[in-house]
Length: 167
Ligand SMILES: [Zn+2]
Image (cartoon, rainbow, N blue to C red; front, side, top):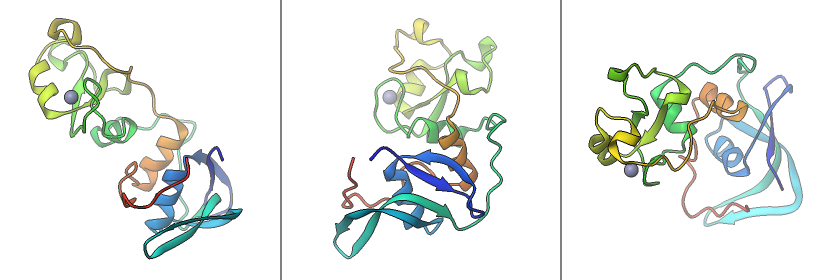
């Protein structure tokens, strides 16, 4: 059960996303289940749904797969799943690894999600100068991330805590 295939509204295959994200898209009414795992259901409280293998978007999206998704603060938070790159706690801000005052760019490879506390204590310094370590390196968004930006779907938000999604 590796990922769920996402079809555009035109049935053209777009990308693969995690099952969790597929469920979010269906629950947000952004996609419908085209094909489900036979005999597998997810069940919790008042909600029951098939485990999607293939979903299809309700609305046609033009996804610029061959081009880089444009950089945005929201995009960085989505890419990093709202996890602080320095401590792993919930992040609400975007940190420039090399500060803009040192010539650091607004780019995917120079920005990470950060909690307000770490962003504040790092201030106008590089991680080395601040004695802080990045838990993971910033990276260019994957096609699945690009698809989610295009849909305006924000990571795992919208999925109730109580809904257990098979890993
Ligand atoms: Zn932090």
